[in-house]
Each structure stands twice: as structure tokens, then as C-alpha cells.
Amino acid sequence: MKRVYHLLFIIYLSFSSAGAQAQSGLLTLQQLKDSALHNNIAIRSARLDIEAAREQRREAFTNYFPNVSGTALWFNANKSMAKMDIDPSEFITPELGATLAQMLPMEALVALQSPMTMTMMKNGTIAGVEAILPVFSGGQIINGNRLARLGEEVSRLQLQLSEKDVEAQTEQYYWQLVSMHEKERTLDAVDALLADAEKDARTAVEAGVALRNDLLQVQLRQNDIAAQRLKLANGRALVKLLLGQFCGLTPSATAAGSNTYVFEVAEPDMQTSAATAAVDGGAGINTLPEYQLLEKNVEASRLQYKMELGKRLPSVAIGAGYNFHNLLDNNRSFAMVFATASVPITDWWGGSHAMKRKKIERQKAQEQLADNAAMLEIRAQKALNDVVEAQSQLALAEKSIEQADENLRIHNDTYHAGTSTMNDLLEAQLLLQQARDKRTDAYIALQTALLAYRQATGL
Image (cartoon, rainbow, N blue to C red; front, side, top):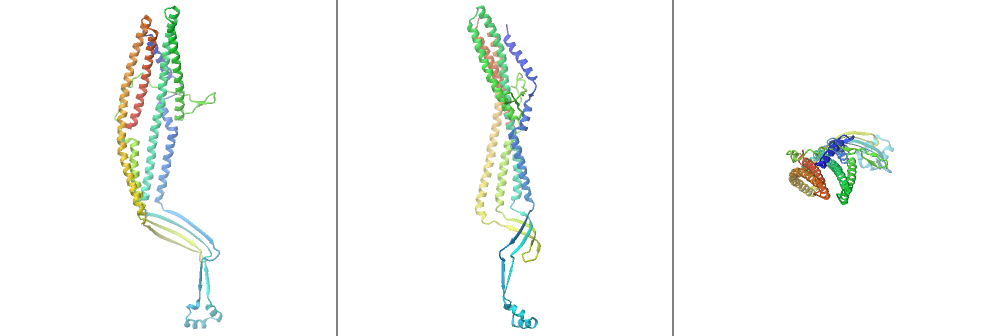
């Protein structure tokens, strides 16, 4: 029975891999990413933020246009708002009185010598419309529009960051499923080896050439494998639920009333070594959304300083209007043009401190840009180091599998030759299982490191 266990292990893995690809409803990693980028709540929220920023930019643009307003007023007072007492006799000279005496009857002359009261504006209507166009406002309109455009650009960069986070989380769930599925395959292969060992041990016990303890050791090992399989199955089910919800997939109702996901992930060929995966130099940190957000923060602080300065500068506006009133008991309408100028004086007292505060914030943003740029460079270098280390770990894990295979072959031969115990054989099988699990972990660690490197270098 030379190499029997080793051959059984390889044959089983081959059929398991082929069967996995033949399943229906397989989703590739790229399909999962596409679904997550379309359905994930973080992405939808980031897209809504872009729409809100776009509307804010359009709102700021309207400040370039005249501000048109209309007013209307109707009133009825309990008494006139204007009252004037007139005594005509104060204005009639003796010469004018002699002339009026010859022209007017006596009753009219008496009336001219009596005081009179004149009232007006007890009720009336006032209406008007005017348009005011700002000519100069200290640059507040221009800089406000620049800030609004900057806000939209920041929202787009935030969307890119959200997409990176969603892709990273999707890959994490995906590789967790791949890892657990691969470890389940290893357990299946180990089960096959244990089944053959149990058969040999049972035959030897029944023939009286081996102790029953050998059979019990195999059965205990089978129980341990069953416990590991149960733990992996529960873990896969949980991760599949998380991945399905994260990617916005449609669950299927079960008989128990709960929802589950029936999809499977299309797994890579893990038998192909990834230890020599190529690593490019990257596009540089200048292309990273993290770096660009820092630059936008510096630009925003500069514009905010200009906005604060603009509040302390004179403002000039021109306007035109059309008005109507009937305050003097007759309808009166007229048009006019006007200009206004406003010069803040006492605002400079507190405004100087506000401008200094904005200068400090601008300096702070510049220092944060320099510091975080250095940290992004360090992150990229660390990501490259992690990739190189993961490649080395994978190469060592593959070498360990070869050694564990050979160790199992030797112990299998010596057990059947009667020179080693069942415990030695089971330990050799355990070492092979551990070596394959370490190889799986090393492969997943390399994929995770490659993802981190791509995101750290803008690939």
C-alpha cells in the first residue's frame, strides 16, 4: 500500500475542485465586488452625498444673478398718519387782503381768516418690485462658488474611499469563504485517510495482531475531524450571510421562516503557486484619494480665509425697481435705479481675530498634508514588505506539504511493516493536515497583502 494515502489525498482534492466549478450559481470575486459597489449602503450614501454637493454648487451659482423681490402693503389706520394745521391769515399781507377783498365775496374772505386742518394717509396701498445685483462683495460670491465646487470634488473622493473599503471588505469575506472551503476539503481528504486507517486497524484487531487501542485512537481522531467540520460549516454559513447582505444579494426563504443565501463562490486554483506574483511600483501616493483629500483640505482652508477676509471688505450693489402707492388719495407709480455701498468699520475689530484663526487652520492643514503624505509613503512600503513576506511564507508552506507527504508515506510503510505505532501514523496525518491548512492560510494572507498593496499604491 505504498503511497496509498498520498494518492487518495490528491485524487480527492482533484475531484472536489472539479465538482466545485461545476456547481450552478457560482459568483466570482469580481461579480461580488460589482454587486457590492452597486447595492452596498455605504456606496449609496456616498452617491447621495455627491448629489447633495452638486445641488449646493448649483445653489451657490445663483448668487451671481440679481436678487429680485416684491413687496405689497395695504393699511387702514384709526386716524390719519399725517396732520397739518394751516392758518391762511398768516400768509395774507394787507396789500394782498385789499386785492382779495375786491375779488372775493365776504364769505370767502372770512373763511381765509379761519384756521384749517389737513389730514392724509389714513389708509392706502403700497407695492413695488426691485432687483439688486451685487457688483463687488469682497470675493465672497466667487470664493463661495469655489468652495461649493470643492465640496463636490471632496464628495467624489469620499465615494472612491467608500468603494475601496467596500471592495476590501468584500474580498475579506470572499477569502474567508475560500479558506474555510479549502480546509473542509482537507478534512474530507483526512477523513478518507482515517477511514482506510480504521479499516486496517479493525482488521488487525480482529486478527489479534494489534491492540484495540489502535482502533480507538483512529475513532477519536475521526470524532475530532467531525467537530472541526461542524465548526467550519457554521463559520461558512455565517460568513455567507454577511457577504450576501454586504453585497445586496437576494436571500431565499427557508422552511423555518428565516432567510439564507444559496450562492457559492467561484474559487481560484490554489494548487497554482502565487509565491512569485508580480508587484508593480504603483502609481504613487499623489493619485490616492486619501492624499487628494488632504490637498482639498488645504485648498478649502485657503478659500475659507478669503471668505473671512471678504466679510470685512466693502460691498457694492446696483439695482432697479418699480413702485406704486396711493397715499395721497391718487394713484402714483414710478421707476428708479439706485446703487448701494456698505463699508464695515467695527467688524475689523473682531474680524482680525477670525482671520488669524483661519490662518492657523490653513497652516494646520498644510502640516497635516506633509505628515500624512509621509505616512502614506510608509504604508505603501509596509504593504510591499508584507507582500514579500507573504510570498516567502507561502513558499515555505508549500515545501512543508512536500515534507509532510513524505513523512506520512514513511510512517504508513513502517506501520504496515510493524515498526511504528498507530499513534505515529495518526500524528503524521495530523502534520499533513496542519501543513495544508498553513498553506491555505499563507495563500489567503498573500491575497490580503496584495489587496492592501494595491490600495496603498493606487494600482
